[in-house]
Amino acid sequence: MTQTERRAYLIQELLKEQPGYAGLEIPEDEDGQKRLLRSLFNIRMPRPVGQEFLAVQDAYLQEETQRKGITDFADLQPVQEGIYLWQGDITTLRCDAIVNAANSQMLGCFVPCHGCIDNAIHTFAGVQLRLACAELMQQQGHEEETGKAKITPAFNLPCRYVLHTVGPIVGGLLTKKDKDLLASCYRSCLELAEQNQIKSIAFCCISTGEFHFPNEKAAEIAIQTVTEYKERTDSKIEVIFNVFKETDLNIYRKLLGAN
Image (cartoon, rainbow, N blue to C red; front, side):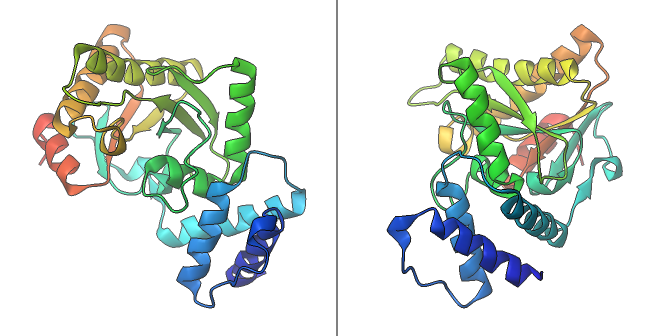
């Protein structure tokens, strides 16, 4: 199957699960079809799916990621010993693990084509990721606590694992509790990574953006927590600070003394 044929198949199969969208007109243009497919992935509830669907989906998503271009962690240069700064799409980074800024439901973002990292990671990992997260939440029996972390396979992403952590939501003035909880996110991820023999981990800018944590203070906490953890534990884990926006790139460059 070509990518066009795979996309058409996936759209048709996902529409069959959504009786409310019967008769929906499928866009003729490629961008419109991609947006529709992503939207259908986003709204799909965590439920099992057949092997044929998974085979087509996996081939489609892996090809899409290849076309975007994969960055290999091994090709990055450290800005400090064991610490890297990289601007790019975290869903295209090949390393041991990436960190997802999750919500307390831990099921990914259900808003069609939303711009958050949670949406992107769940979209390009495939429907298996939401199902894996749902199983973890069912076993736990309650929503994920802020500052903790969970681990899942990465499925169709170039990395091996996804670590999911729920950052604090800042509703007004920044508090000490907000800062402590954000630091806990980074520590929890590092501890969980080490428990799973993960050698390289990429952190997104947890709690900034949708959760309204001030970007510069979030970066300060991220760097300080990682540095203190590595010094305290003598950890050799390689840490990549992943940024997407130019604003965050400039903040991290300044704080890390990177050129």
